[in-house]
Image (cartoon, rainbow, N blue to C red):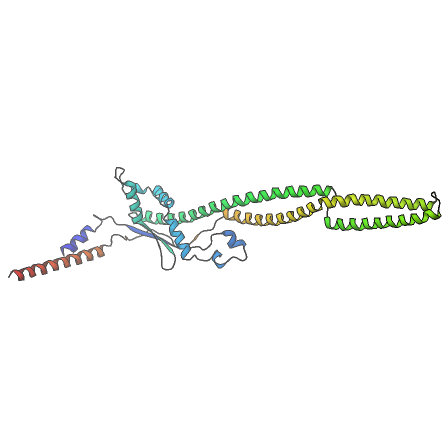
Length: 338
């Protein structure tokens, strides 16, 4: 009875400051990339923006919740070193502060794969505010991490994209220079020039053979001979002109084909890079919430600590068993003495 009365008195608010508990419960989202979830038709179920995260996402959230950045932000915002009444001349003020933080603010995973943030504090409103702020900080911190990562990838893609554009411009300039030289379509031009050269060569040979025959029967000033010679010279001049063009195409045609092929490949690569750039730009500049809030923290009306009935029960039971053992020991001692 003495133990029960004493525990009831010493567990009261005069000796133990009561604490109030507030908690936030949420499910992590399964989506990390906005572009994959919204823009890709073949995105998996895990990229569904409405899908709840699984064990892996819950563990990631717990890891972020236990980060130094969230802890230091909460400590600074609520001035917890003063709130927990830690003196500046304490031998280890920082260690005591972290121990108080760890004992009053806990993070855990529930059996349903949701995450719970629990805060104990002497001020019920502060307990609710801290829990809600930690939930908001978690969301903003994960967004910050993803944005930083996406920005790094965006810079890499942008550098590669600009480099490819520069290379493409040089190749297009080189191809344009070849076009000014008359090399437009190697395949078609080679075929046309070959046919034209063959036709001109055929005319030259036929007219030359005819001139040999005509020389035997006509004077040199005969119009037939003059016209035949004119056609031979025309065919010869045409052959020379065609040969010059054929030589030019033969010399630079390979370069034209190679440049056309490379330009086509570069344009395809640039198109892919541009697509990646636009997606990464979306990931780097836009954000979605990373949690589905089930319960927000509210101001608690009843204290959660200490649990007085449990303290009284445990103390009374302990005192009863100690008294019982003492009585049994005394009785046994009397029996042995007698």
